[in-house]
Image (cartoon, rainbow over all chains, first blue to last red; front, top):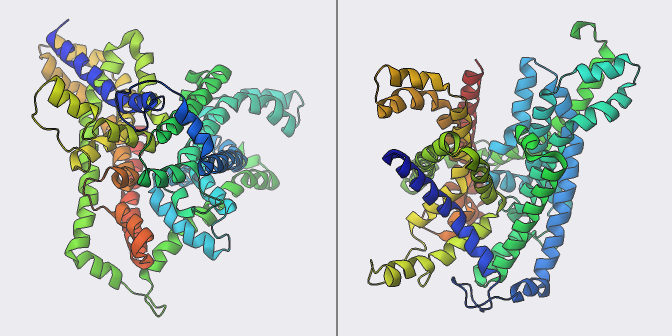
Length: 263
Length: 280
């Protein structure tokens, strides 16, 4: 191996240590037997996972976050899939402009979306409620569904649908029997990103905090400001586990390669 | 064919688009518009630019805008410089390992910002792993260093969040580079280094641009890392957060969000120009 290659490989390995180390440390600490968060750990235990379930705000907010992520994802699909179907078959200039607009929430600072929405939704009378939180989360999740479904549907030949129509299938039957099965990987990828984005969101949810609407990240942030114990590590590990499981299920069902086309 | 589509079919198609379009017009555009309007509204309800004039002539606030942009730019430059060699190894050298690399690159994206911050706090605590290495194991230092609340660690944490985006953008463009162009340069007697700087690097400029804009955009709006890890930065998102929490001057916060939004819109415009050029 040449010297330049050796240097490149050392750099790359150092890079991945940098990427993985802070995360791996948190996973290890969540299994600590100590009463404080420090690495290396003196021994192994599951006590901090048990602690999560004793602290009511964690449980309540976990429930809020799960409900919110599911509802925002379903809403994003209902709004986003029809729009994506229409936009991917249209080549005109304004269709491109509209696609850009529908994806633009991804490019705006989250803190501005959160701050502005709080005032606007209060003015509309939604106040700080689960509904208000769902609306704002749908705004930030919708672009993911539109992006992945558009990408998959665009790569698919219209011939399949034309064939079904020529053979006498109605518009609805064609959609249900041909289009839907073909775009399913795109929908799955969109749902996955949407769910994870909503579940992990802090900068938007932060502005809609109340006893009924505190999400898990908001409660974790508040907890961290007062205490620095391994229960945050245990929660983070559970959250990572959830994300990995979701990713593996999606991979099993549709194949990760098919879904990465969609991104 | 589209000319022969009857009017009601066109209408039916438009109905597919309408819900998403209306939803974002009402719940995305209007809040941002309403927020900007608030920054232009004087106490008695009239129009005023006074907040902007006082904001842009105040040394402190002007400094905040500069610091926001400089911090985002610094994070962007560091991310791109780190990302390039990694993307190069991923595309050209990794071979069968590339799947593992992509997994290691995506896995951190699945973790929450709180988890990463927690990791940094533990690693760089006064009696943390890093100080232990430096003082006890390697003996480089006599006393443990204070890492937390330093600008360097906050920047490292931001780079940690954003560098995967840069790697993926550069890798996707690097993948499309025609190897024959490089081979041609080498055959004509150019050194490997010269081939890289005069052939490979210029061909991947678009990937660098896409990645850089993406990183800059996210860095520009991020504040959770800075809230938790400190570093003494005074940036627009951080000040909006403080205004909301403690000072509660909402008109000032609206002014700052509008400026932040303007920076984001400039980035979006640059991004679209780059995409259009790639398409052409």
